[in-house]
Image (cartoon, rainbow, N blue to C red; front, side):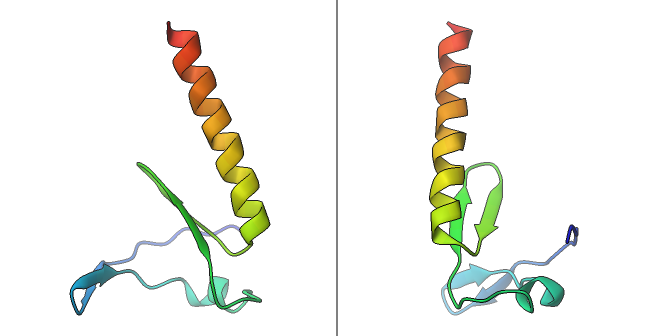
Length: 69
């Protein structure tokens, strides 16, 4: 399932939060998600997949840095 939505940032106590699309949440099989963020935010429901994606992103970032010099 591919989707796109716009969400407002809400204040919850001293923190800020954003709600997740209900159709995406219905497909979740867990109660926790992994977050990977920089200029963009990735919300990944599978810890092993999150680690793999993070490793790939770090590798690409290092490749970009070394190719610029």
